[in-house]
Amino acid sequence: MILECIPNFSEGRRKDVVQTILESARISGVRILDMAMDGDHNRSVMTAVGEAQDLAEAMFRAAKAAVTLIDLRGHRGCHPRMGSVDVIPFVPLKGATMEDAVRWAENLGHRIAEELELPVYLYEMAATKPQHKNLADVRRGQFERLRHKMAEDPPDYGPPYPHPTAGAVAIGARNPLIAFNVLLNTNDMNIAKKVAESVRASTGGLSGVKALPMNTLSRARVQVSMNLVDYPKTPLPRALEAVRQEAGRFGVSIFRTELVGLMPARALVDTARYYLQQVDFDLTQVLEWALCHEDSEDTDPKLP
Image 1 (spheres, rainbow, N blue to C red):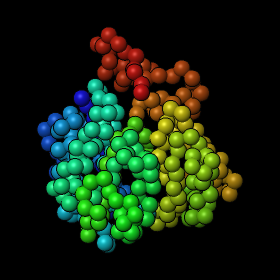
Image 2 (cartoon, rainbow, N blue to C red; image 1 turned 30 degrees about the vertical axis):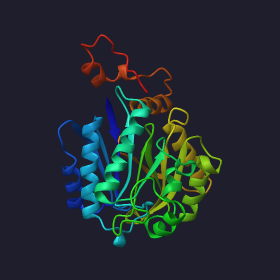
Image 3 (cartoon, rainbow, N blue to C red; image 1 turned 120 degrees about the horizontal axis):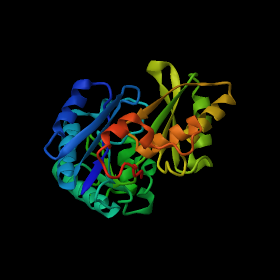
Image 4 (cartoon, rainbow, N blue to C red; image 1 turned 180 degrees about the horizontal axis):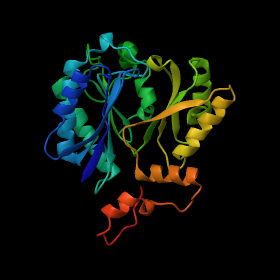
């Protein structure tokens, strides 16, 4: 049973702290595939895979390091956050079901609440309350308003009050998503807000797209930060072109884009098909793929 975990930590500026968190998760049976840092967001995102029990142990150790090393009382960044370890999603991969991912989210939640005295909210597929399905709703008010929130909406596990320096954590189970940022050639936050609103599903935009405007001060540009939670329904190229078109209404072009963490192969194929205008393109046409699979009886990639 192989699961993927993509924990987000509220530190993207101190490399030594991020490295310590990373090293804490290096245990037998777990592969850390990526660690992305963003100074403007002041956030880091790890991608790890492994057998469920090993992966849960690695995530506990990483969470423990984050609680020890990150004090949110002095934390500043443009990304919403409510905890030092802010969110830990489990994603089912090989031999695993969504029910497995939910069970291990619950197991880890119990342990983190008990041993780290950190309040835990279960979200998305693991949510026990309708208002916890959407991560943005769980995190609304952020660290600064957490005590007020918890008085009205207590966590699933742990104390009914925030950890004094580490806040609370959301732990859940979900399908794969694509985290994708688009930087615009402007520093006008009003434009970023209007573009984000136009593409965001909850405000009448694209299905399965979450979008927030953010001010990336170090680059003197604003950003539309997106999560594509149903990328087969709204492929990456469609979301990107929607941002491009809406920004163009204000005379603004795209400066560059950023992929945060890893994305599924299907999303890469969708992007190649769109921009190459080759509807039957697949990974068997990629040289390195063919070389890696030349001895396999089944060279047709099975995309999720």
